Structures are given as C-alpha cells and as structure tokens.
Length: 146
Image (tube, rainbow, N blue to C red; front, side, top):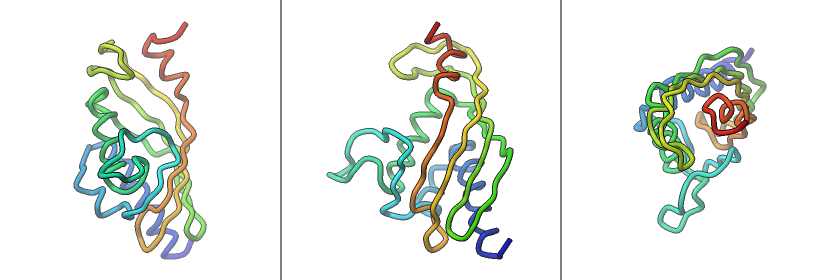
C-alpha cells in the first residue's frame, strides 16, 4: 500500500474512532473538506442556506444527533483498506439509547450493528462519504419494529 493510501485509510479510521466515536467535533474542520458531500443520509436543516449534507457542519450535526441518542457510541474497525483516493471501512457500531432517537423516547437498549463506509479523499481530507448501514437491525434491537 502506498504512503498516500495508508494516510487516507488512517484518516478515515480516525474519523470513525475520534470524531464519531469520541465525539471530538473540533476534528471535523480538520478532517472534512468545506464542500464534502455526505451521501449517507439526512444531516439536518440547511445551514446558512447551504445544503445540509455538505461540509464539516453537516458532519458535526450528525455526530451531535447520534451521540445525543447514544452517548456511549463506539466504532470497532473490522477492516479498512484503500486504493488511491478511495477508502473502505467495515465496522461494528455499538451504543446504548439513553436519549431521544427518531422521535422516540430512550429505551435503555443497546445496539450492535455492522456498517460499511466508503470515502473519497481530496488533499488529505474526506470529500465524499457513502454508507451501507443495518438501520433495520438497529431499529429491531431498539424495539421500534416487530
């Protein structure tokens, strides 16, 4: 693996562990490009007229939202590899719902789900993100579905 590819993989692993897992919001400005697009879902209301799925503020919104519902959110990296400007991360996500989530009161239940994330890196920062999550499994574990 090239030095650049290794640095890109390390960047994406750091984003999972420190930004999302530890809630270190200040890292978003360092790790995310100003026009980063998160293809992974909703990122809240528009911010100053900008698409809510773009840039560090969008990622900060997602981290606040997730950690508000799951304060003990943790990401275990199962696989991480890259090729040029693309990185794939397969991880196990764990957390306990002690805050409101999707309009539902805290359940106190724990979740453990697999996710796959793909990133495009530009100038040493995350420029695009796609996700494949087991949202149905998570909702089942929380008791939100039958």
